[in-house]
Length: 395
Image: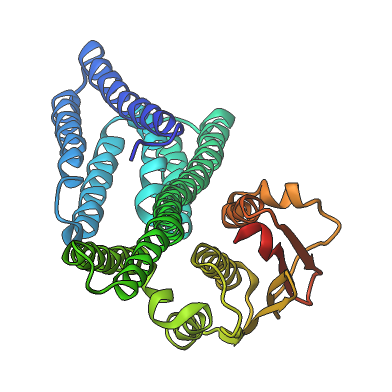
């Protein structure tokens, strides 16, 4: 996955910290060379050792995670000791404490890092006062630097945590989008299979059945007529092709509905998949009324999408799925006892949310069937999803 937009900010801050540390170390060396003293050789030696130790920090990030923490703390300890030695030799090394502030916060955390900053600031103030003279700048300068470092460091950590949350959210959204795309693809495939099964049943299978019946009637009307064996062969061929057509219909029918019907499929999901999610689902669906296979498939997918939303967002413990048919009117409801939502919010606004894609897909599916989708909800009293269809229009 691509990094977030804040990644260049982090990279820029790290680069600036490295440049600042090396530039200040070079300043200490330059000062020791330009104004030589008895300690110049020691200052240059310790400064070079400090730079080498700082450079070794790049290799710690490549170590195994199990040992990285211990190595990083050891590296920071060695760096601090070398800086204290250099500070004892040269007062210019006091400026190096500023990049060290950020290392303390990054590696020691907010609590211990802040304590290390306070301690190192006191050390710098004392070192400047003992090596020269006590001045207002020698006291205020390190204090201001420590305050700025704390603000920048804590802000950096907050920005890093926010970036991690955003990246985790983006990963979750991409995964969810992939799952939704796969679900919609599966629903489209099942809908097309149901349509093909219905077309084969209504056209090819019915035609072959009629041809078989007509040939059988002709065979019985005059069993001794000339060429009766051709009529028998045609009837047997039609019967064989009818068997094949019915086999195609069975293969195209969703297996959940083929064996159990809509009520059986919903009851099986309630006992297995939905029960394992901690939701008790009561199914009140009768298979007495014969519904077209494509309609059963659509209602099954609507129920699956609705229960998925209940499990993920409603925090419900129970739900009820009801199917009633009166004359040519079908009413399909899914009721839960979850948290619900504000009923004054327009439905299009609800569907505009990133987590309501399933609800939008449900409405589109209902509209394709020529029905209406109604959602009744209130905060704290659950949600009722109702689908009203005219069976005559969907058959």
